[in-house]
Image (cartoon, rainbow, N blue to C red):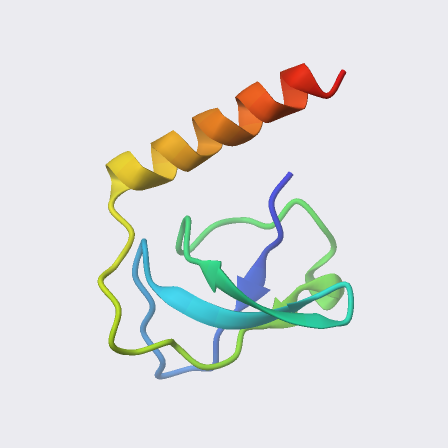
Length: 79
């Protein structure tokens, strides 16, 4: 499961962009992992993403896969 956010009309986000998001009532910088997706939760529970963080390169698909593998490996170690 990954958190899902929406952006206002007219704002374009791309895979790997960094955006400000709120999760568990705290502000974080998140990374766009997909666009035009169907959320796994009820649409009314999907929160709005904040600003796009400028001045940083996008995360590449290869970096994202590395992060996901590290997360999966860490999950196995914590069992």
